[in-house]
Image (tube, rainbow over all chains, first blue to last red; front, side, top):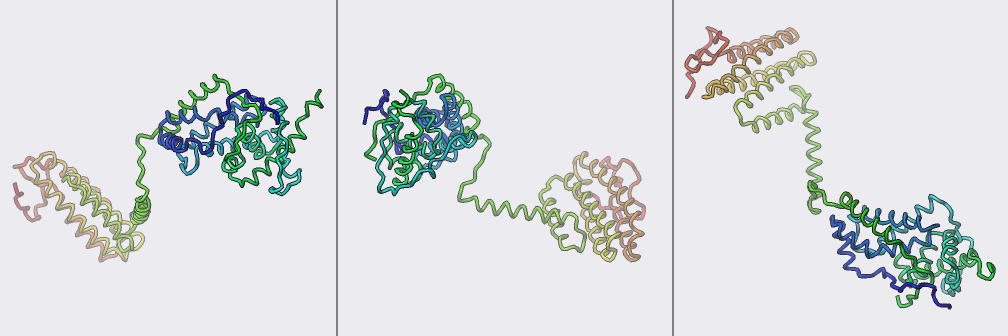
Length: 200
Length: 227
């Protein structure tokens, strides 16, 4: 596999993260402590931005979505349940925001049913280097045509660097299911992203 | 969770300006969205069911009291109506306010009597007795007020007595003919008693009783008020 084009330091945020500290901040925020909410914002705004970035058409849409996510989180924080890791809770809000936006634009095409569903035990991860070799606008355009769950798995896996088990915990699916979704998403992307050879 | 990998896709970075603007917007919104409400009171979780039951009882009682308000002597809910009046009386400690309330209750008994005359003349004796009891209570309260040291209280007693006397005579004159013959005489007796007991008392020593007239000459002499 070719090296990652990413030039930034790799600091993936764990869904388990600094759990207790997050929970305490979230509980304080829920009781009206705006500074605690500000601290959570500072900690996770970049993660949310990365989460939504490849799932919309342009940077402005990504910023709109980030605003939407944090405004929703602000209104929902009094009802936050500390049993759930804060980042998982925040991703859930982000997921709903992305889905709501996709429903409004109705641009994505589902490859979930179009592709064969292999037995998850037999899944061999498809070559994902096409993502590394493509520019982000091409990836973004292709991702926009996947289902929200496929988009989410691809972003969490290939932008945030989570393991499939961590993604399974975040999205509330079995690890095998996540691997299946990832497989089908990569297969779809290979058909949607033109290869450099073809473009040359 | 040990197969975390380096990101394959470029990790986008958000504009610093946007990050700052959104933070400042969120902090402004937080003041409204999550700031604690100063007047908000929250029952302890364990007590919520008890408060819910209490609230339900209050609603039921309020509904029953509301339904009882239009009941007449002889109705099943009439006792509820009278009980709520007794509670009001028991909680009224000022002499003038208490006399005012007794005057209102006497009005109410008379209104009931008028309703009974129209709808259910057979219940007239019960209603008449209720009216007589109300007159007695009102007159006793008036006597107490007339004996008060405060001139204001004595004047208030006089005003209440005059208003009640005029009103009740007019109402009784109107409804008396609609009552059964035997009830008519009873009502008349009660009203005569009321007219007598609420008439101004000539008491030069107190300086009250403006309006003149005094008690009817055939009325029994009122005992000298206690000082």
